[in-house]
Image 1 (spheres, rainbow, N blue to C red):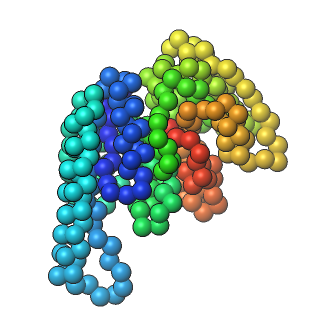
Image 2 (image 1 turned 135 degrees about the horizontal axis):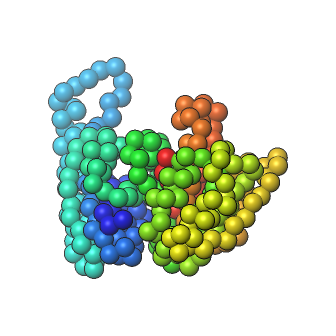
Length: 267
């Protein structure tokens, strides 16, 4: 894991995700690619004005040009290798088009500012489409402690396996790794097998199984993360179908909506 891609866009989550991406790149001895996205204007109403659309797009481009210059000035003082590229379009589409040779993508959980991009929805889509880890950072997070305690939420699903295997380079840097299962596993991959897999990478996790009767799994996981003072949470995204979770709600949706710590997600 050497190639880190981070979204650059003038919104409420930019500072948090940039700092996390720098922390990540530095710890891995990797390369940071900054993708500056000029978002297409949102059309409101039934009437379309080509002239008005062009003016709004020009305003967006000017704002991002200033933002890009500020970020490049900031990066010039950092001790990591980096490059900056630019794209115009919808944020999720631009990230997907640029992430092919990246090992991990850094974005955000839900942003509080209603004028900011709908980051939780963007991350949900990216996790399903990219098939690589996405690190989602809360808006007010200021430092990614890769040497801290790490919590892995295990349910035996294919997404949980993808998150576990995809996070090995980061787990090797952790001070401690805690593998937690709430309820019965979704399939034949047991928590014991997950622990053995980690041990073969010289990672010895603390294993904990919680029955979790009459309590939502995400509530238990969040409480475990608080108890451990976890630096971040590793979890599979959308173990059930995305459509089912969108209609009925689910662990992934709720965690992105109210995450207190960074989430490392994979599907």
